[in-house]
Length: 225
Image (cartoon, rainbow, N blue to C red):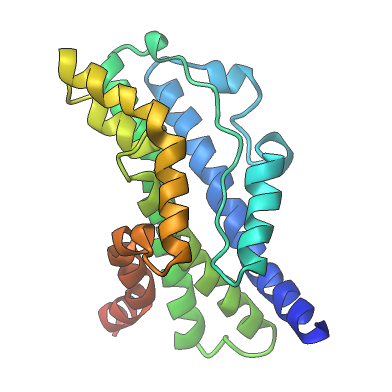
C-alpha cells in the first residue's frame, strides 16, 4: 500500500505542472481568440489570466485527474470553461471555428514546445540531477497536451471538435447534429463500459496523437542534428 501511494504521489508531482498548464492555456486561448473576434466576455469575467484559481474546476481539475491517477491511467481532466458569447463575434461562423480550435491548437503547441525543451536538455547534458525530474515533467507534459488536444477534436458535443464541424453545416443537417448533445452522456457511459471490457474506443481514436507524443522528441532531435 505504501509503495502504491508513493508511486501515485510521484506521478502526481511529475504530471501536475504540465496538466495545470495544459488546461489553463486551453481555456485562456479560447478567451483570447474570442476577444480577437470581438467578444470580451472572458476578459470582463476575469478569465484572461494564467492564475490557476480563476480556472480550476473542482471535479475536472482535481477529483477526476486524481481518480485517473489512482486507476493507473494518464492524468486527464478539464478546467472551468471560459464564457463566450458568439453573437458578439464580427463573423460568427468564422469566430466559432477559430475560438473552438484555439484550445486544442494551444495544447499541440505546448506539446511541441515541451518536446523541444526536452530534446535540448538531453542534447546539452542537462537531464541529470534536478534536470532529470524536469525532463520527466516535460515527458508527461507532451503526452498530456497531445491527449487533451486530440480528445477535444473529437466531434461529439460539447467538445471543441463538434463546434468546429457545426460551422460547416446548415439547416436540418445542423439541427440534427446539434441534437446529438442530448445523447452525449450515454455515449460517454457507453465508452466507459466498453473500456471496462477491454475495448478502449477513445484509445483507438487518440492513437495518432499518442504516436506523435511518443515519437516527437526523436524527430526533433533528428532535426536538430
